[in-house]
Image: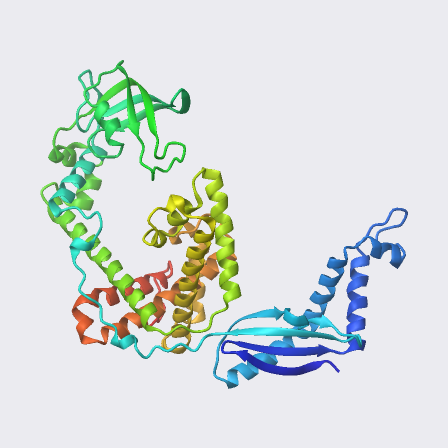
Length: 496
């Protein structure tokens, strides 16, 4: 009789079920699986599925036969084995994350007496010690820590310049090009004598910093019909890898100079075709400073909150003791990522180190010169990053399952998934992203956000942190609420 023959917890986070299919039943399963394969075999001189058994079997890959037998065996017997495992795991108060087939040391095999034994490995959610999270203290975060943050006056001036240009009307001009003019130009890029790109009718808007400084500088003061040649040093992080880090000679032929029709921002607000849109969005030119100041402050607070959240994550990772994780899974994932990055490096003709730090910016802070990183070092850095991500993911999963009280209902998840499938771009997906992938990512996002909100609330329980990290908790509430909000406007009852 087929049955569970043993269960055993082999490590802190692994529980196994060994199941035996008796010889008579397994023989019938094998025959049935082979018969189904033979029905699809075409042998010369015979109708499909009608060839002698021996001849048909010669046409079938043995691996395919073995796979078919395994599939049929599991289809019949997997359910009782899984149920037995889950029942024992529930008694232990543990949560199962994943089930895999045990293959080590012949755990799954046909035995000499004709019976078949298989082993299911239940990967359990680690028991994670969160007792010290409430003791975490987060230092005060200051605006000057924000990388690349301009002064408020510079931000307002820059945004006003953009509005002035974007909503203006441009007309052809005979005069030399100046700030805020558009220069229509044909460009040819040369690397030595080799032509690396040609662009026709490119509109170069002067004065907003949208183009490389050398290009704007050399196209200032030109007139229609001018031809000029100048060098441009493309930065190493330039998106086009054929140009990145190279000195390129540009040949430019000016086709036209276009000047803005309106000379002041007030005129743009009053006379442009988009004046109604401008007034509706900003009020008036006079109120623009107030509007932009508010935008600046909101963005500053958002970026400060991101820094706080990063500090909280770093402290949680240091405070929570390490726990058992599947090292084989970590290694396999690191190898998969390395393989993909190596292909990217070869395709873009850059070193493996350079592509690694592009994909994982945190690694850039750990190495002096990415271009000199060996493949072995790249693998070590990737494995370290993958291990940290696995630890963080496990912490969030544990918190969601064991600590969060007010979880979204299944129908709340379904509403968000439906909305994401309908309008994937709004959720950061492409139109061709598989629905199954969208569903999985959406659920993961919601779980992570709700679990992180729990962490923030725990950290804020320490009075030292209340003034410095309060907005972080509020941001998590808003983020969670937005994520679980459907298009109809209904919001799930996630914990606030």
